[in-house]
Length: 102
Image (cartoon, rainbow, N blue to C red):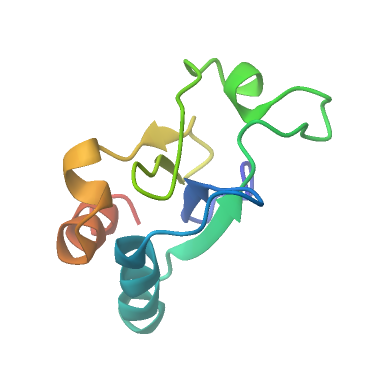
């Protein structure tokens, strides 16, 4: 998903952090209208490179939780873009923001 060129919207999640309602709603809406794919990633877990997402992509580690989700958009073989906090909890705004990068 990181290097395939297709746009992916990712939310950090793990066994203690569930996906936000806004993220789920945006994924349902965009599955019909867009080629953006949605997924989750344990941002603190090890990737095949044996690095965490944060280290592999040079991102500052951020705490994530169900009430304070953290997400990224990966598209066109570019480095992951942080989903702005002002969009991540609003499905409509999140969808509109992601559409600019597909």
